[in-house]
Image (cartoon, rainbow, N blue to C red; front, side, top):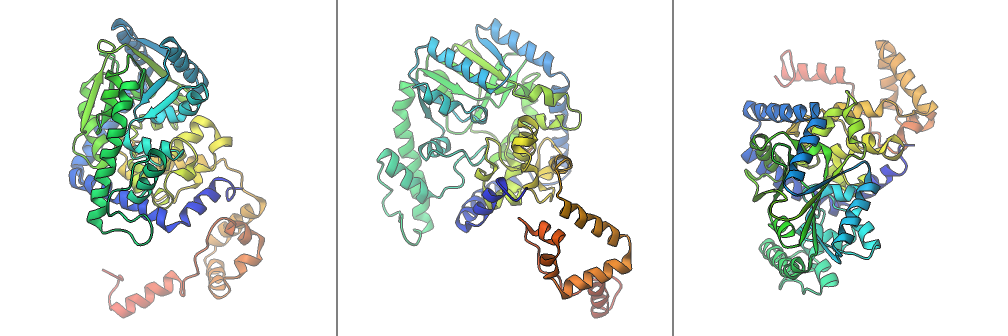
Length: 472
Ligand code: SF4
């Protein structure tokens, strides 16, 4: 069952070495920068402990913080709408746009708008939605989903982007950049990347002025001041929130923080883990005092999750994308095979919890359970353990169960285990003949058996190296 659907998408993506190369190159750059600014060690662990404590404290008093935030925004002249689900959030945003007689909406990057499928909904209602973050603009032009929470177009090369701009915006490819055949020299590609981002800016400059309403997400919401915190590098969120005549913020309820002081703990970890930057390019703290503002607080299953003692810490996530950067599955396949707004290990945990196992129950199986995601997570969410727990209720076929029972029986009897292992080493095709073996191999690759057992290898190495422990 698990080999179907989701796994086929992963297999197809993993079979494309060019895609894996592009994804890995982008992620390696982020990880290298992160290692430079946030080295492993007790200092980083202490920071992560503090960040987790801040976020878990938020979860302990979330309803009170939501109430405080709502009062503060309303006192400053804004409006807050509590949307129980995606449909209500979309309808509320549409009604605000109708109030404003809006025709063009300018948007900054927001995964929560992806979660509720806002763009296609608004377009079906006749509105024009202009993504103003460079990565989001690129994927919008290609009619694709973002591939990564913080880097939506990381699965694309500079050549892919040049082709997209040429075909969709009529922007000629940068001089000297080869779009067919062998790639251009690295310095030409770097110059081309700069030129393409400038061309995108020129294209967007006029669009900002046409925007009737700006729609943004939020990195955090501050209860004590009613501020909306948006972290960015391109200044597009600032323009989206200051040029149009009204601003709409869509944010999950879990984005609350008690006060601005929590930002001192979370922001450095967020930027260092997300993009390897010691600090964000721009941190916007916005209140309705400057631009008329509507905040739509999205529940969509979050408050139910809050009451789930086993999994509630998933709501502590600060959407840094670090778990994607390091995940071996994500690094091979990118974000699209996950099939929803949230990809990588956090998506594989969060989506089954919010959307239900029927819809997203295959995702926890898209993991090697190596634990790298939990090691990098700045708020110490034990993603690997959550993935394992979410796998537990999945049904196993008769043959698979028989296989596991046989393995458990043999594992408790060393002589039988040795005999079975020796048989497999000599006759590996047995796995294809026996039904449990066939069931196991459906959708999985069984590596070729080693030439010798671990015990034999150990004894041989000891003799070869002439002391008690190989490699010591
Ligand atoms: S789970 Fe942790 S590492 Fe992954 S996006 Fe959330 S905060 Fe970042």
